[in-house]
Length: 481
Image (tube, rainbow, N blue to C red; front, side, top):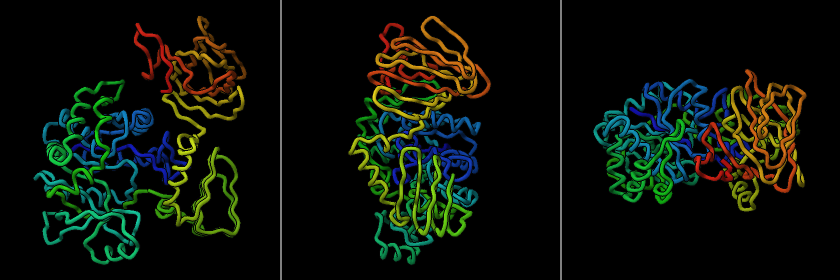
């Protein structure tokens, strides 16, 4: 059995912590590890095989870094564009056939779900294996403990048991509250978890029957994929023309071979701040707090600050999230509607929907401390042994001041070492590189000045991470990678 972990999505309802450049699956919302890392650890309860991870190319170093933190292995497929779950699973199934044979058994899991009871999770998976081996397309239905209007449901045909599974009678959309109450009391309905188990050849056969255009283009994307460091890049030309469909719409709602296995394992999709409040322990007066928070006469709130003091007085049932560049205040019961704020930000072209002030790179991170007309100040952290690309800028010069650690600075033909409190100047147009040769993180303050300070004013000559490096015969190109 090969795990397939779908590591796309942006988690807009958990804004402002979850953003396009650092979505919720990579956040450490509960405990010391991210939802993605917990998913990787969870699959070890049912198989020793390394997972196939499907993620967006912009998140490749985040995914690889979090896999490495766990000291695990993974095959990472890079989607050039987002095309929903049906094409992503098709690419993973085709790659699984290359790695493990025609009838490889795939366990497909979203990267951003929470499951409390790993033993119950493993038991449900084991119950589904015989049915999946027989050629059925198995999904896992979460036993509902309350009427929930935020999930789709699966109605099981309990008159048609198939070992530990039941035939799927129908998939139904998110209901209103009265309908959800009926679903829960009937005992025939389960929450749609988005987890699946099937043979690779059987899924691809069904895809060819119900969504042949997806199958055709996914085959081309995998056949023409290229290795890039530790990643496998799917061909953009083919993958981009795949219809953007979910597996439910493309296959599961149309096939006669869909089956559901009930699962009661403390599942939560962590899809909103209210659901995160539900599953977090340690509430004092019903409050969950993170960071520098003071409460007075405050009840049943979720309050998070990673930048400054947040104080609340005389409030209840609120979500208050503070980041260095945004503050969210919402009624807990309306947290599903936070995605409307993200939509409005994108329509207005505002960067707060896309990225944090702190931006992660494969070599470390930078924090944009201040900016104004013709200047920008950043705090840059370079991991031990890591280096930025050899590059130049057309529109800006830079001053670097070492805060801590040791910096190896290349500026045209000059290479020198700088230590704490020392500084250097990088003129406009100079070819330069910053490297950390030491054993501790290097921190510098960078002051940029010039007519244009965008991240796309970077011409790369060489890069350890394969970001926009030109061939020897090519002119270097500007890139934002």
